Amino acid sequence: MHYISTRGDAPPIGFFDAVLAGLAPDGGLYVPEVWPLLTADEIAGFAGRPYAEVAADILIRFAGDSLSHADALAITREAYAGFTHAAVTPLTQLDAGHWLLELHHGPTLAFKDVAMQMLARLYERALKARRRTLTIVCATSGDTGGAAVEALRGRANLRLVVLFPEGKISEVQRRFMTTATDANVRCVAMKGTFDDCQTIVKSLFQAQGFRESVDLSGVNSINWARIAAQVVYYFTAAVALGAPHRPIAFTVPTGNFGDAFAGYVAWKMGLPIERIVLATNSNDILARAIGEGRYARGPVQATQSPAMDIQIASNFERLYFEAVDRDGLETSRAMRAFSETGAIDIPPKALAAMRELFAAAGVSEADTARAIVTTLNESGALIDPHTAVGVAAARRVGPLHATTPMVVLSTAHAAKFPEAVTAAAGVAPPMPPSAQGLAERPERIDRLPGDIEAVKTYIRDFAEGSR
Ligand SMILES: *Cc1c(COP(=O)(O)O)cnc(C)c1O
Image (cartoon, rainbow, N blue to C red):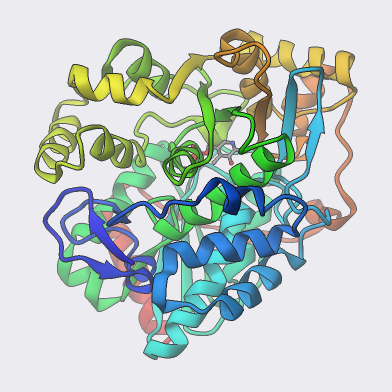
């Protein structure tokens, strides 16, 4: 299996090279040269099997010859052994037509753990074979950072630098990353927004001399392995509810469009997904793109669901590439125009292709809080604000046919956002036993201005100091 860049100007590379590279050298994102296709029988065969086994089956489709099934299974078993629920990503029913897909049973209580735990093991394997030491940079809107720290801390041949927007994430989110004591991890508070942090990370990759000098890699959802890992739970959830004999709809709380794009990939692989509803908070660039056909950045607003306070959805580039029939030149033109002017019009044919699968809704702060209360009253489930954005959007847009099950991705545990949940529901979410003690541990935080040169110097010093 080979990986090609969405901007069409980088040589195809193998699975592990794509994982190690993160971003392609032409500034594009890697996607598989062809979509692996599963038959209905193969999909039906996932029913009733342990999560790690299904994950291994899907992982080898993306890895091709570079990973044996036995090795894939060793990786996925180890990756998901630390989850506190035996089903890894269990479904819970809200009412006759709605389910929650709980993705928050990993060590940092958000869905980012699902992919990051697998990615860490893929890195380890790739690096052992290549005898390299990588510097991983990661921009976080709150949850990726913690998941990356937890998955990568203390590992050989890796150092990790997390950039987060100061004051714009919850305390629990921050503590999951800043309380690690391992020498290979650094957390940096930046002035500005998540988009500013992400732009700096992308610029570091474009800075050719720098990229090589510190052997840079990235664990943001620009990294293909993140997407590959997230494809798995679409399959397990759909099969549990009757796929492939019955179509399933999903609603995905979205910011950087990684999780939702994984749903698109599952669809491309043959899973009968009837519709994916993109749920955004008031940072609704993706809802407007699908609704109006114009992908236009607005100012970032702080909301109760900070992990989605994003106005530049990196993975939209992967969808755009698909929607223009994999025209790398056109994707490159459009993405450059977007970064220069902050807005592009989606060609009508491409928009129609996107709307084949995607619908979208932007959810206000008031509706988010209301969804927390209603879900508690009607189903007894205490949900976090990101999940609440999903529930509100699912109820507003719905599946295409009334009898199609609607699965809302529950992307974080309520205890990760106690302030917002308590304000809305009047009940404080209990911290799961696995995460207790977090509030007492000392934090380690460095601070930098929102300036690429300062970040480069900081990373060079870290890399040299730990060589
Ligand atoms: C990251 C995150 C999202 C958004 O996921 P994307 O893949 O960036 O769209 C939603 N909810 C939570 C809790 C998150 O941490």
